[in-house]
Image (tube, rainbow, N blue to C red):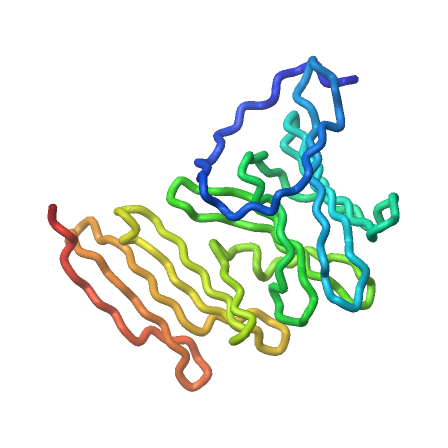
Length: 224
């Protein structure tokens, strides 16, 4: 084996004990004791009842932090699609990859956990399913969303992220798809002004088809 060096130093994000688990099967695919070994997590997903199940393998190289997604149809050994995912960090709580219908078209897409912040914020990469090619395509519209929740009933995506001060600095956003494009339709942003020692909360609403600032509230910081 070529690997003879230590894994590069990289600051790992905080982990949580009670995160949602998908229980993938883990395998060591290299036994070279002179370097860190590759690990592989295997998932079985139903993308749509009309399609055969797919087997997805997420391979992580702790020497380079590189991740590869291999996708095959159930019962077939060779993958029909291989995705070179962004660099990530291996975690023990098994929330790396999930299948969620992120664009509400009736077909589940692949959602890959990219990072996990100390305040609980999470960022993801999204690969949406294309019905014509039956392959997954990297989605750039959703990549900037933190902690997204997908509301199938109302066809809305809601995000919530915090920035400190016991959760009193935060961002809440609501999106919908319009003509195939993601559109912000409501937002609440709360921040802290060091100069005045006050919190400032701004709200954005849709008005006549345009997103506008409709409410700004300033209130004193909480005193202990």
